Length: 480
Ligand code: URA
Image 1 (tube, rainbow, N blue to C red):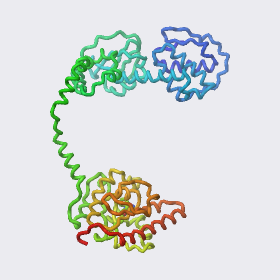
Image 2 (image 1 turned 90 degrees about the vertical axis):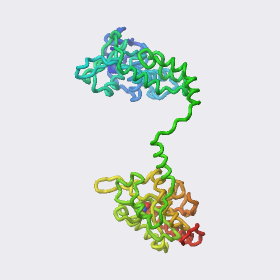
Image 3 (image 1 turned 45 degrees about the horizontal axis):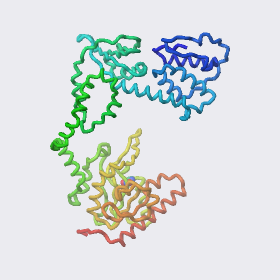
Image 4 (image 1 turned 90 degrees about the horizontal axis):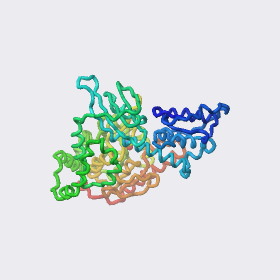
């Protein structure tokens, strides 16, 4: 059975399918590429009924690579395996089967060869200066027959120019965006490339003598490719001078960071510091916040609300749709659940300071609706700047964290709130933090009994918060 060098994958597939449907066992087929033609196929009488051919998707993928391997037995190995798979389909995943393992190893070799081709082909410009499209040519000597399966990569990369890659085996030409393959082209005499110096300079610059690992470098860039790569001529010299250069680098004074680094450091210092204005300025400062991208889509930042002398601070997640529009915390559906629970727990909302861990509404638009998105850790940590300022200025006896985001912002821990609720933890800044459910969590519970229980738990926790805030010794509150 002869498989042509060009289009080998499709040709082998068609032939194998045909042989299989005729019930031709592997030992009755001699495979070869178009250099060694002996076609048993044509001599086999078509007496066998076409049977149902089973081909696992993963085998198709292995075969599509292995057909490009340089092993002369590749087609035969593949057909043997295809034949066995018909009655033993599990072999496809059997790592202990030597024939399957061999095919997997061959697949790997081909992939590696394709990778090398993508990395080490070096084009030289060959077209006329006045030509409408620029033309490039490269000479390359791949280990396997990888020109054809790799050609599309170059076609995508260099769509606006004509190019060709010539090899001792199959060569590829891309003209006007169309690929064409040919065989047995002689090695061309290619001009030196004007960009060659650039390659060399680039390579010399990225070469770090302090990190030289000759073996690793040669396994990544095998010596057989060097002769067609302009930059490779520098390698022996770079290797031999590396130790001296590395010593010189170690002895040299450290380089100073660029000027831009000073700006970055200043920004980091600002972010690590805390807000330092008087309490009366805090709402306005929060209002004008643009410290993270959330401010772009939101209507406004929503600062906390309530007496700044409160013993209890209640922290939610972030403003919702209603809060974003009205500029006040907990005035939408979650606010109604909170108000109801507070009423039942005997908590007067006007006596507490109520705020959120994140000050801007984070959402994605869907039609006319804005769908709430939970803030990520970086947004929570960034916005803790404002929460910390609020806590410092109010300096309550107790902080009530409603939900995971508030608990994360206040304690640094994202652990499950269901396991923590009703307990008092130590906050990041030393304050006492009582954990409870977020009212939205209760709203989302579809099971009536569970919703009722969660509402009762929230009430209990609010009741506990009022008591604890009365009982606990508060931190220093200078102007209380
Ligand atoms: N959810 C919150 O966490 N805060 C609000 O202000 C509204 C809904």
